[in-house]
Length: 263
Image (tube, rainbow, N blue to C red; front, side):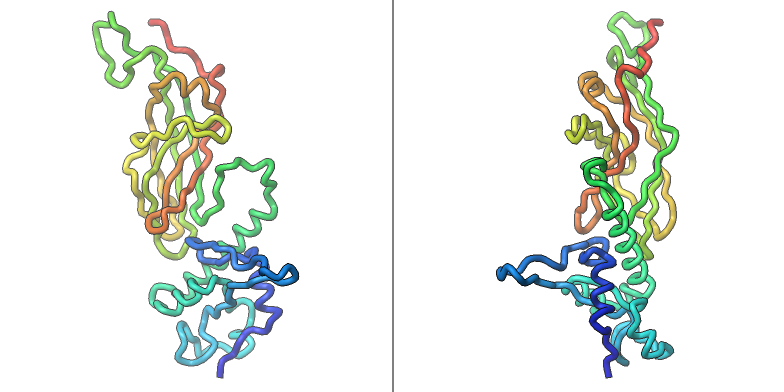
């Protein structure tokens, strides 16, 4: 006999994740308006983490009926992801699903506690955490036509250099992959430059719940970008679903960056 959730449990599971799928690579909205103006559509499922009946995915015979029907054994998913987790229980383990739920609730908490008017428009909420350290920006004299020595790293007068260290932490219980890492210069919400050579390698495997550190030291050779810009970001895409992620590194004022030395 299946031991299903009561309706109040289903309602709480949906509300605790903002009626979005808890799969961090999906996060599809599961509720919306019906064509009838007084009704709504629900395409979400209150799925069992440990199966509701013997023989089901991740069934745990040691659980009591109360435990099996409790909110702690539930996860809110869209119908596609609910089918997915039951089709490959070796991949979608109890730990993975518990981690999905925890991350989804964390993201929902951030969404309701952060003002969208004050938040930066390209900042993303995701299961990958970002931290930046030791941000520096400076200007170099560069190489001039009459110089007896050519400095390869500094072709033009006023070359802007920058350096920082950033760390990424995958909060999931399974590894995640990101690609196309870039350093971006922004003016407000407009992207002025997306430098594909600033971060090497441009693809990273992020192990579960561990920090990965990358060092960045590069130059910005277009003076107009530097003068128009106001902030620096790191962007990347997830491998598989190509979700765009973007993290804020620093704000800067071109007028406060020291000019290059004359000698």
